Image 1 (cartoon, one colour):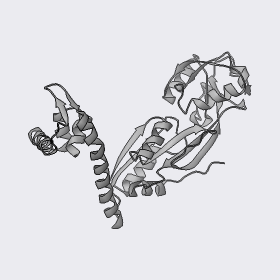
Image 2 (cartoon, rainbow, N blue to C red; image 1 turned 120 degrees about the vertical axis):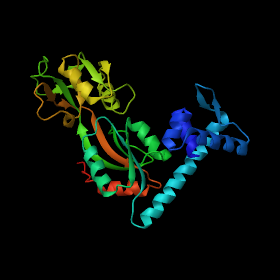
Image 3 (tube, rainbow, N blue to C red; image 1 turned 120 degrees about the horizontal axis):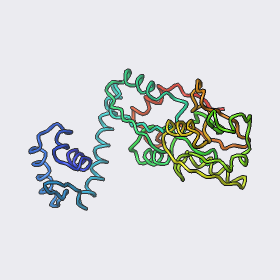
Image 4 (cartoon, one colour; image 1 turned 135 degrees about the vertical axis):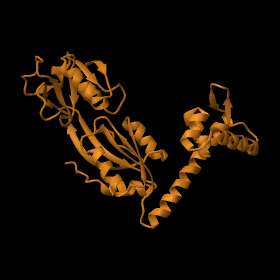
Length: 288
C-alpha cells in the first residue's frame, strides 16, 4: 500500500522507489503482484507517464486510510510507553502573528525527536477541511469575527481590528484616523477574493455601502508590504504584521474597521498523540 501511495504521489516508479528505499525492479514486481492478486490494473503506465486507473484511485483512498490507521496504532503503542512518535502536520496562514511557529516546532522536535514534522502554508478554509478529514493535525487560522470555524476544536489567539497601512510618502500618511469612506478612491492590495484573509475587509466596505478597488492580489504579506512601500497601493492589515522598526510604512486606525480573529485549530474527534503533545507544548496567548 505504501508503494501504491508513493507512485501515485510521485507519478514515477523511479522516484517512488527512491522514496521507499527499494530498487525499482523490486517495487515494480510488488505492484504487479498486487495487481494480479486484486485482478485489476492500478496504474496506466508508459515509458514516460504513470497514472492511476479508476480502480487505482478507489484502492488508494482505502490504502491511505489503512496506512493512517497503522501509523496511529504504532504511535498509540509508543505513547502508552511514554514515547511520542508518528507525524505532526501543521498548517500556517501567511498572516500568523501570535505564535513563533519555527521556535515552537524547534522546541517540540527537541522534546520529541521521533516525531516527523510536516509544515504547510495555505488558507484557513483548506486547513479546516484537512483537519476534519484527518490529514492535518493542527493549524493557525485567520477568519472574520462573524464566521468562526466549525467542526474543529479551537482556541482564540488574538482578535485584531485591521488598520490602514500606507507608505510613509503617501498623501494620507499624516492622517491620524480614517473612516472607511475616506479610502474608497484608493487602490488596494489584498488577499485573493473569497479567501478568509480578504473577507473581513470586503464585508466591512459592504456594510457601510461604499466600494473600493483591489488592483493587486497576493498571498505573501512580505509582497503586500513591499507593494505598499512602493506607493502603488494601500491595505487593511493587522497592525501586528508591521515591523516595529519600519520607517517607510504608516499604520493608521480605521473607525469601524474590520475585525480579524486568529485561532489555533485541531481535531475535535481523535487527535493523535503527537498533536496532543504539540498543543501542550505551546504557550498559548489568550485573546481579550
